[in-house]
Image (cartoon, rainbow, N blue to C red; front, side):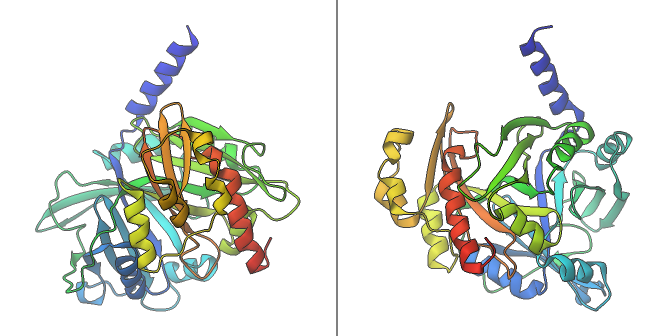
Length: 376
């Protein structure tokens, strides 16, 4: 059998094994969900969608759901001490707990994952209200992150049973964010291949890219990364682990302050990164700064692009090209007290890669932030 046939069969297996339609929602455990919801609305342009709390019969925690195009964030806080949500926040600070995946059959997805070695988070359960029913199930991933499979083909409510529509007079305009492009996990040294195997064997993902410390390093820090994708490419999970370096890497810093493995950043797509980033900056979102010399040789490195170089220089947007086209990307500073999770804004113009040509400039920018924090 030829190599291409083997690759083709693996691709088919990845597509057919556990079909995933896309990211359903991301749930962040946060210390103050009401204020976090206001932040994501004001700064990022999300809109109010749904609410669960005391008024809906939830006595232990409350959740505000915000939405922008296909991106839904669920922001959850405890209402009393001694809860699992509170313990999670005490240990990790604010961060992603749930990556919910939209599937046609949540029971099938759970059973397939379990028979391939997954650890159960939640057996399939059905929740109903006047708008229909939703079936959900869940498995554990790295750290305390969980994947919940959501089957909503028989539901036409606002979000999920148990939530009510969140009516709000304050609905800021969108900043042009469209969908979750990828989500990056940081794992302990020596654990990257373990989690790569997990996504391959348990969920049928395939490895589409890898970077080692020669690709991702500066004079001080290094890391290794492999990118896992489901069959249709709608779910992409790069997995990072630290590599030995002269000083503490950004992954080491994350693992220290998050006190374990977890989601490092969420990459969200836009169709017009210059407009989106201009809007975000005007609303107070802070981004890593890149030396302006990066732009002096930009066209020599990536060729002709549609965007105005001076606009990219002014905003600090990075550009990289692969065989399929080019991409534009920029990274926020961390969005909570601990130097842990941040966001990436990305616009793809054909490129399917992750900006390998920008790693050095990006990591030097991160190191400048680490130096200010005294953690390099």
